[in-house]
Length: 195
Image 1 (cartoon, helix red, strand yellow):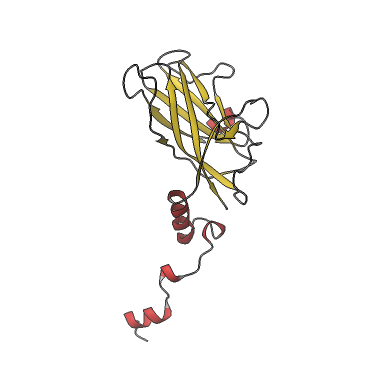
Image 2: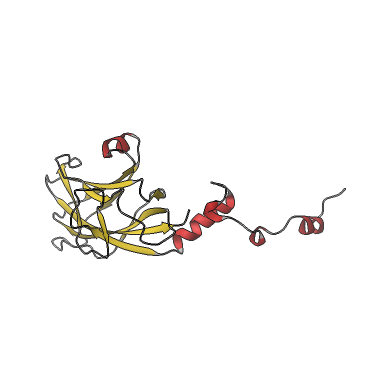
């Protein structure tokens, strides 16, 4: 039998007319990846600030304008007690019923205490922050004041990270700057996913 374009049209349905399971389907399949990209760019976004009491596992609060704060060391990531920002804890629930996954998508830096560049490291994992860093579970971005002395930056910055699981994964932030004890205050925007 000779395979022709007409035969293929009858036998193989077009990719865009096939039913797919999206993020609930086969991980890393073409349909899965296309759906993930689509959901990432055409999705809901919710903004969070620090909760009033971060002593437990509930670190973020939706619509809070209380900033998270990461504190730098002297040319290194801050390593003193409480230098890291507790961004998302295992007690932080899904803001939308049915969502099981999330990612930090954008960060708004409200205040940077010095004008030199910062490297901000967003760390994620199910155990300790140190274990997650050792496992290379982090992304970094560089930020700096737009105008020297302005101490505010104005526009959200995109962050890249994998989808994490509500109730299981935690997110921390660390700051690195040439000035010891320099602070970076920020709010986070997250995307939620159903699967």
